[in-house]
Amino acid sequence: MSAPQHPIQLQGISLDSIAQEFGTPVYVYDGEKIASQIKSLQTAFATVPLKIKYATKALSNIAILKLVKKAGEGVDAVSIEEIKICMLAGFAASEIMYTPSGVNFREVQQAVELGVMVNLDSLPLMEEFGSVYGNTKPACIRINPHIMAGGNAKISTGHIQSKFGISIQQLPDILEVVKKYQLKIVGLHIHTGSDILDAEIFLRGGNVLFDAALNFPDLKFLDFGGGFKVAYKAGDPSTDIAEVGTKVSAAFNDFCEKYGQKLELWIEPGKFLVSESGYLIVESNVVKKTPQITFVGVDSGLNHLIRPMMYDAFHDVYNLSNPEGELQPYHVVGYICETDTLAKDRLLAKVSKGDLLVFKNAGAYGISMSSNYNSRLRPAEVLVWEGKAQLIRKREEFDDLIRNQVEIDI
Ligand code: LLP
Image 1: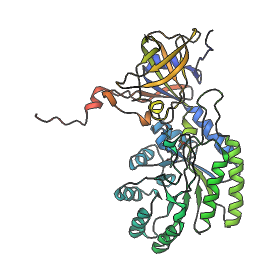
Image 2: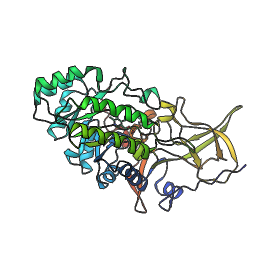
Image 3: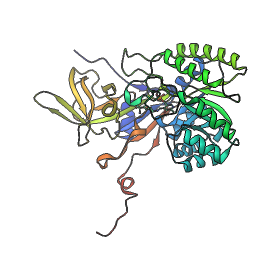
Image 4: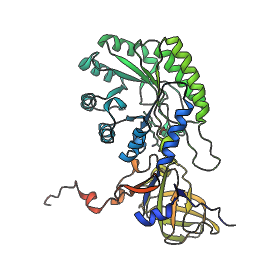
């Protein structure tokens, strides 16, 4: 049996040639894919005033943020550092939503001083915010709708035992704090999880928002969060964005009639915008046969792509160097000194030492969750945009690793 060909080209540039030019390991992103994902959301939600607030945490390179900005959309940031990166990319404070989770109030104050709107995620934060700012700073409230959704327990955020948001059952308490400080609440928010397949879940979340919204007369938007599922392999289901768009927009327009005002509909996609745009190219260091398994050891690992080890996530992998080779079973493993399986039991076109392998769906939560574990260096990042492959982050060097260590006499 020979392998199907996977000559992966981005805008006419082959991944092999990018690896030759920039070395491995390297993250490569297809800017056109990101732009087309944004377009498909804009089309799916064409009957409502849609605002996309890209979840910066998925991939926060400034070049990627600039693409989102160029498409006329905004961002969601979860830390003061993400806010600053977004500003460096050219976003105005008014285009940034700050959705912190249990942060120190000093950080919230910094965000407010920069002019960014805060998404309040606890009753104590609402109290503190109210006592300092009263009704002078418009804010949003993050509701926990008590909906169990998402690809796995680690990425489900809207259920009753989750730390996120303020329980919808505590709505009377929310309203009391709003009244006490005359808070100016202009938005309500939910985010129930990641890898959510069914349109139904977004509709259920919407219903929670709609019911709660009737208690807030000054709303400007409802924020449905992110979580759209993308395909990780051939035949894998993905969220039907057209269906979500049609159904959620219809329900939203009905609600706006009832509310008596046309609100904006916000969404915060991360994976949907960048997952499929990204590729991690690595080199095979060793092909090691054991009595039971043939391992391919590569020049990368869970320090660069933690999703397989952290969530049992599946990332498709191909041999770029021998695309027509005979298929053979392998475990592709990283060089980290603990169990570090990137891909288990995969049929790959015969792999030899020095071959280039590529992992797909590496755009979201790839480099943004990377680390220096084992004192390893982070990869370079390259963006393919308008037919050109350009370096957008230098490969780390040894000096980067020790920069902040302080030597003392021992
Ligand atoms: N909005 C908020 C408030 C979020 O917390 C998140 C993701 C998103 C939007 C975007 O969700 P997305 O569209 O990307 O599913 N590291 C995990 C995913 C964690 C998601 C955390 N929050 C993974 O690699 O699967």
